[in-house]
Length: 301
Length: 156
Image 1 (cartoon, rainbow over the protein chains, first blue to last red):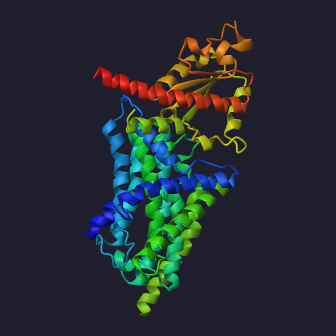
Image 2 (tube, one colour; image 1 turned 90 degrees about the vertical axis):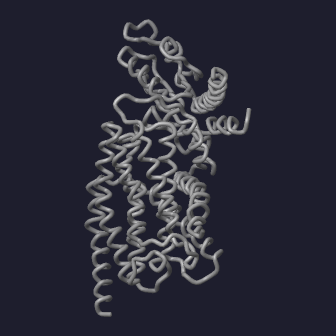
């Protein structure tokens, strides 16, 4: 029953879809404020989604329409699954899972994005898919090492025990490492090379239209909720009433949206080589040192 | 109109995504069009968004008198935009070919080749006029979508 509430109500479907639209609005609004504009109204992502579902998309020759629809649908489903796994309430039950399953689900949109690029057969789609694959390899090294650091520090891979505030510095270095990877996972500046607008149009999404494109936009919103939610549950103390956990989850998640969107609006796009250098040369050194020190401390007992 | 139709009508009006096509323009209209996207005019307030792919767009904004070389591109781009869609002709060139009228390499005016919904005359038109033209096209687009649905339902 508790698992069903997690999946359907909070932080699942009923919360995540409007929250995803709201976070996407936050992303655009932050960019608008940075550029001295007013920006879109709060309901804009909802208007865009409904409009896209009402577009008539004739079948295209040489492209498998079912596969084209499958990738965004899989992305949306995996994100809802990831959200249902998030232990927002430390003692609130929900789906019992470990962090490996959550990481696999969080990685699904990236894999689907790559496959969508190759499915469309478009030159821009393929370039975007290759860029996404390279960037995914680059940021996942840091992402996984950060998770290992937190897991070794907390001595568990179980999500319910993995989550929560910790005074251990290794835990916070791990959280910082995850936060560094979120812009690449969301394809935000300066790591927006896979969907570089004005350069390769929309990358793998160039050939998409109508409802499948709307699903991609929805998946992007859900990615925002899941990834910022993941960082939030690692920073909220386990003690306290249920409303404190909900309020802290919402405030911390939206604060991350504003922070990352502001950074996105304030930075230019990295070339693929610079993005890899950032993750493998600088962030990876930090992550390897953190993981190694966490393992060393663990072995010392 | 039932609730779903009203919702769709509102969403189409509030979310017009544009595709910009230059068919041999002198770039005067293009500069004014791009100005609309700048912080001074901030068309994102109206939900207007410039897209890189015609398949994402609802409205095609066309500048230029349609040269022989760009004619096929105009037809192909128009075919790629999914229904319901609208066309906005920016400037005097797509409306009348302007000073290029009579040239052997000009295939315009635009209405000879694809249906045009809104003309924004001027050489070049002011950004305020362009924004008004796009807002009118969004209204036409929304009405057209509802009318098409009703026609579809009647034929069934």
